[in-house]
Image (cartoon, rainbow, N blue to C red):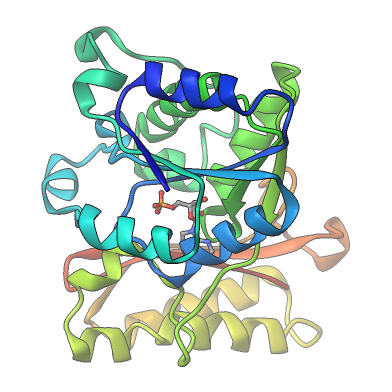
Length: 277
Ligand code: AMP
């Protein structure tokens, strides 16, 4: 497995592999089985797989969240090496942002709602780094998790709008056995917190099972009230939306692809999840 530190290293590696198909998995590290499922899929579908590990400062709206973000590069490299990944790009901040303060790229897509509303500037930072990484990787396919559904949708829209060549491959959410969606931030939860956190999955499942019995607004009210029964959770939002337009649903007939989306703090850790209904 090659470890690439500079943008020039990636350009050279890319040239060595010429017209072979390249699968790319961008991550912020602290890898878990969710990330590895994306890597497995990339390996199955491409000649070579490139993974990037970069905690991107421009996408953190909360400086404390950036400071606390887990960094486990040595363990990550061991996991990727065991999967025989071809190359891993682990750049420094200076390498990706020679002039950090001047870097900003606004995406006028889905910017009014949910994650964009709760985390101002977050998706501008995501697209700023994705654009740089995509330009370097020149990948055939890029593997992104449905766990971050709005991020996936924004990147898909941006790729389409910019007429980029990469094919975006959405990958299903990998969960702990009790249902908690895997996330790098979960390591900041206590053991008891991890148990409690499965409430998110239970509520999503219950909403799904009630679909034909109650309207979307009724189910939103029910789900929010369930969270309020557990003061350990500070709910940011629970909404039922159309998975393509992100419009809130008044009626099931308004959408062929209804999606429940949720964000909540538990033990100071922000958890997000979603489920197709
Ligand atoms: P991150 O390191 O959190 O930026 O995530 C890197 C990629 O892994 C993103 O495309 C995420 O959506 C995806 N990902 C994160 N958690 C999961 C999960 N539990 N299941 C599947 N994909 C995930």
